[in-house]
Length: 329
Image 1: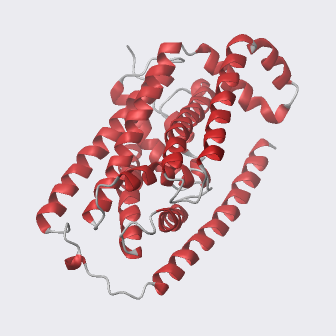
Image 2: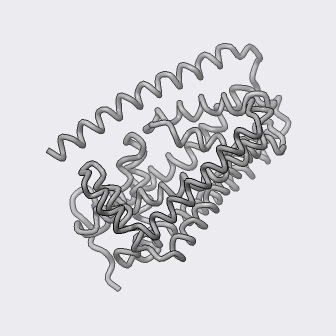
C-alpha cells in the first residue's frame, strides 16, 4: 500500500512538473522569438578567450567549494545518528545528486544518500536530508527578503509592505523556534494523531536530538554555499555582458528563491530556471539569449556535473547490486 501511494505521488509530481516545464519552455521560446536583435559573443566586451578560461577555472574551483560545504553540512547532520567520515559523506552527497536530479522536487535525493548506510538508518537519513533542505530554504528566504526591499522600485513593490512581510516572517520563525524548544512533547502528541504527518514528527524528533552548535554550523555551511552559488551566477552574468551593480547582486538571491519554489526535475528545471531568469534579469542590460545561457551554464555546472560524478561513484562501489556497509571506526 505504501509503495502504491508513493508511486501515485511520484506520478502526480511528474505531471505537475511536466506542466510547469511546458509553460516555462513556452515562455522562453516566446521571449527568444520576440528578441529581434542579432546576438553575437564578439559584441560582448567582457567575453574574450582569456576571460572565458579564467571564468571556467573559477567556476570549477567554486563547484569544488560548493560540494565541500554540502559534504561538511551532511557529515554534521548524519553524525547525529551514526559516525561518518568526510570521504563517505562526500560520496553520499554525490550519490544524492545523481538520484535527485531525475526525480520531481529532488525527492530521490535521500535515497542516494541513504544507500551508503545500514537499512536501519535509512529513515533517519531521509528526515535529515529534508531538514538540510529546510535550512537551505530558510537561508535563501532570509537573504532574499532584504534584497526584495532594496529592489522595490525595480520590482514594483512598496517598502512598507515588504518590510511587513519580512517582519512577519521573522516573527513566525521566532515562534516556531520557541515552540520546538519549549513545547516539544505537546507537539509530538498533537502530530502523532495525524498519520500523514508522521514524517514531520520524525523531523521534529531529529531536530530535538541535534545539538544547537551543530545546527549553527550547518546553517553556517549552508550560508557559505549559498554565497558561492550567488557569486557563480554573478560571474557568469558579468562574462556575458552584465556589470557589477548592486541591483544585479540583489536580483540573484531573488532568482534562487523563485526557482526553489517551483516543482521540477531534470530538463524541466532548466526551463524553470530560464523563464524565471528572463523575468528577474530583464532590464539590466543583458540580452535574453545571454540570460538563458547564463542560468543554463550554472545549472550544468552545479547540478549536471555533480550528478554525473554521482553516477560514477554509485557504479564504482557497486551500489546498483548491493548495499555498502558503513566504515568502521
